[in-house]
Image (cartoon, rainbow, N blue to C red):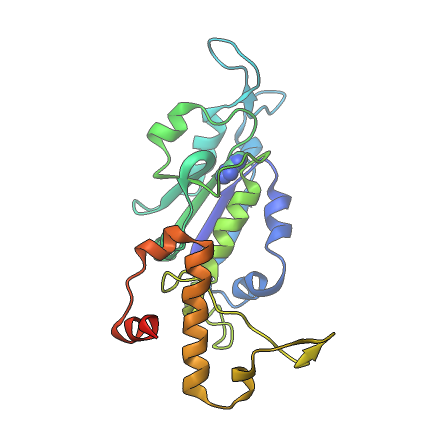
Amino acid sequence: MKIDVVTIFPEMIRSGLSHSIIKRAQEAGRVQVAAHDPRDHTTDRHRSTDDTPYGGGAGMVMRPGPIFAAVESLEPPPDARIVMLTPQGKTLTQAMAHEFAQASHLILLCGHYEGFDERVREHLATDEISIGDYVLTGGELPALVLIDAVVRLLPGVLGSEESAAGDTFSDGLLEYPQYTRPPDFRGWTIPEVLLSGNHAAIANWRRKEQFRRTQSRRPDLWSAFQPSKSDLKLLKQ
Ligand code: ADE
């Protein structure tokens, strides 16, 4: 997969991706990420990427020219997903991360100031994504969030130990609690079943904990959950 990020802070993207699993994924050639500064596609003396809004009002708006030129210089294939990161977009979900992970080329557009000229939204972007109902100073952290969520789903990026299969949300439920040594930490002990060696009992306990957590913390996920036959049995116990 190829990911290009159009940003006036390319170093934020490069440094954000130079650690841990995402760094290794790039080194292994699973994904090629590059950051591009729209400033390199300006023609005025000040190399400006923003301007005052038509109709007046506070703040500045990202000019369309440098953004279109930066994207066009990447020669995107017709099926490229061109994603604006803004608080007006659809809220990112795990299902959307899986969908983006199918694309061969992602182009992420990071906004600043009061946002993009509307013509970027209408005539360039294919998608508009928010990472949640709060406002950040720019689209770079949201772009990093999207990249992380997508890249870890690419084949071969996670080892079997870290596998995405048991993720929270992969079956619509939150994860069960985990414990490691010591079994007694400051007098706080771990659930006895985990020391029993009874694998079936452990699996049942974990599944029930998933139910309990999801019910109490995320009623929205719980009401959408489709229990299997064995889930229904456990729910009746
Ligand atoms: N830009 C500023 N805030 C944002 C958010 N919450 N999601 C995506 N892009 C943003």
